[in-house]
Length: 381
Image 1: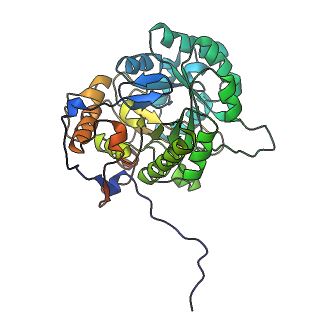
Image 2 (image 1 turned 45 degrees about the vertical axis):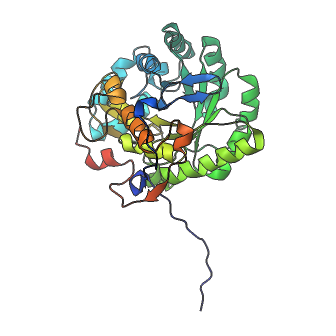
Image 3 (image 1 turned 60 degrees about the vertical axis):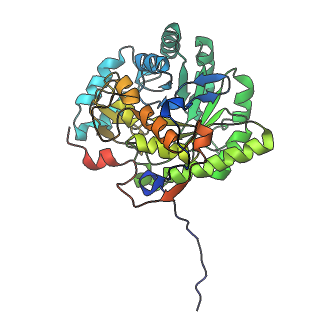
């Protein structure tokens, strides 16, 4: 007797389960164009530093902008809650594993100081850098006018899961269509992982979409609430939404894959899967200029009732410039990320990132669990 099917599952793939097929034509890596455009702003490399306190502060944002990328300053983090955030970051780095979650909950319970929001943005702009800032949907209406007045260039509205339709009895949800009309800057929104949600977000008029729920090295969303999609499948689905939206509107909205990256090969696979850029956390937290002092933690870690992150020890592997451009002093692919990207594009015969989207991919045996390397191998401390 046939059993009726209640739910049908499809196979989803992460970075370690796929590989890129070389092209039939190859080109010199130094002839590749790796530009990312977000509306009228162009970046020479498709790398964005995540809006996490262990990754981005004022100095890091300035440095990455000068190197051709973009760093996003979290407007609800320690940089805007404390006049001297370095002292707080040192406490976080020195806390034991048993102390860290209560400490982070205490640290992030302090109020956001609106004067610090403006001061941090103005410091980045004064250095001549592109300034991107991030807020959660609940605080966007409050913080975005301050960001505009201080001169921010890009607003990122980010949460664990973002949709164009949100139902709540306690407050009126954030309307991205309305926000787009009121703010004179590009708006990047995320995170999402599905074709339908991505397409609806793009139809609100936003400038780019962050893709990724669950794969981050410091994220425990998959373990805590069981929600997430491996990054290759999520990227492919959202890239399909981007192309469909371009067909119906004539407007191209970049897809930015966010989370789960460990080495250069992962970046290359994300681009081949359809990403226009990548957002990096743990890899860049290893830079000697990063504010996390060799540690990294998820922004949902300090949640007062249901933490969905963990602090991980990533260590310090080199300067930001070395991590991005080399020369690499290690063989594991964690340095000279842009060298890896350009080499992969050359091997695939792709002059541009859109051409890299056309590279063939195959299912390959998994190597390690996606994005969880640091959690599986972390040492006490």
